Amino acid sequence: MPFESDHQSKTPDVAGNVDGISGRLCHILGITRSELRPVFWASLYFFFLLAGYYVIRPIRDAMGLTGGIHDLKWLFFVTLAVMVVANPLFAALVSRFPRRIFVPTVYLFFIMNLLVFFGLFRWRGVQGDINVARAFFIWVSVFNLFAVSLFWGMMADVFRAEQGQRLFALISVGGTVGAIVGSTGTMALARRIGEVNLLPLSAILLGAACYCVVRMNVMVATDAGRETAEGNRRWAAREDQRIGGSLLSGITHLFLSPFLSGIALFIVFYSFSSTLIYFLQGTIVQQELVGRDTRAEFFAMIDLSVNLLAIVLQVFLAGRIIKKLGVGLALLSLPLVVLSGFLALAVWPSLVVLFVFQVVRRAANYALARPARESLFTVVPREDKYKAKNLIDTVAYRGGDATGVTCYSVLTSQWVGLASTTVLWLFCPIIGLWCLLSIFLGRAQRTLADTGPPERNDSIPKTG
Image 1 (cartoon, rainbow, N blue to C red):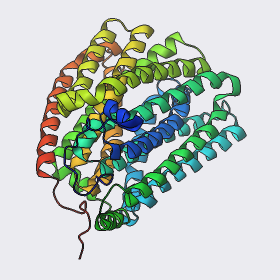
Image 2 (cartoon, rainbow, N blue to C red):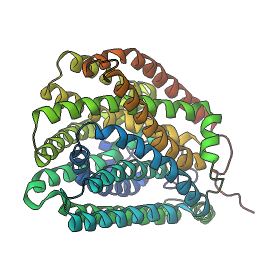
Image 3 (tube, one colour):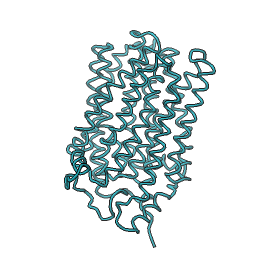
């Protein structure tokens, strides 16, 4: 990990010297002094990133219902197609440029996209062109996965496996606070100034996240915590190194590695279940709430409640739970919550049950399952932290969405005629496989953390 001295022990004493304010803070948070500054900047980076996203997330969900619930089905397929096209372009960027170049470049591209959509909505009118609303839904669905995947790829690149288990939940607090700020802003301002006028605010927040990326990259390359000039030189060379590889290496590595394939399958299970919930949510909300502003406000209320619960878990429990129980059990928490929610919605498909389930499910994901899942990538080669990870977080994720859409559409069609709640009953057994996979990934991560990832181009450049 580039934020520590070259000869620091693999498992640092996080409860050692507690003199001074910073020492006591490190003791409370369970981190070392050398980790305090990078954790702060990583948290700030995640704060601005999710604040920018959560400003537009409720707008996306409301616009997705503009053409009715049936529009959502083909929107998911178009999103998957866009992911398939975008992934090789991203892989080419990763291959040809060092991290300090390609990470800010991706965010600047998204900022320009946001400003283009703002201009389109102002020119055509929000209600005047349903196709712009559909395009915005697809774009946000692509943006959020790419942007967040890139964040966690960078975290996996600069933190070790042991640190990921301790620190990723803590770093997630920044994102949770950002999500609270973003969703609260939308909830308070959507009706007052109009949802479209919130897009420039999202662009400004993403610009701030981009600045944090630059600061972190400089910190990694020039960290004063390393005690030798040779150590600084080697890490600086690593940070300026192109990751390399081919455009298809993410795909080949994914299918050749049981560990990476297992992570991809975990994502498929998660996105599949989320899609079923999303359609049931759309059905319930469309029946009980009228008007896009009212629906956006309800979705923002869910977002705010999720993040208030998540921040409590992240600050006080998540890091300690993951460290004590292990990655496997932290991953297992998510399918168990989903199973309970499926059963509850199958029996009581109401707005209240939906609200409670969504809050608990997403809070468990953000506070426990997501940090644990992202720590899995700390033990894979550097190229896989970006290419294979991005493929998993985007194409595999939306592939699970598309599978969920297909299953839901067929089972609720006029030929089969099942109710939405009956569909939930049918897929409960699949969650059992998801539980077993969680345990497998936890054990595999421990093994790779002990033996080290296979050599590709993830090691520090050799000297002399």
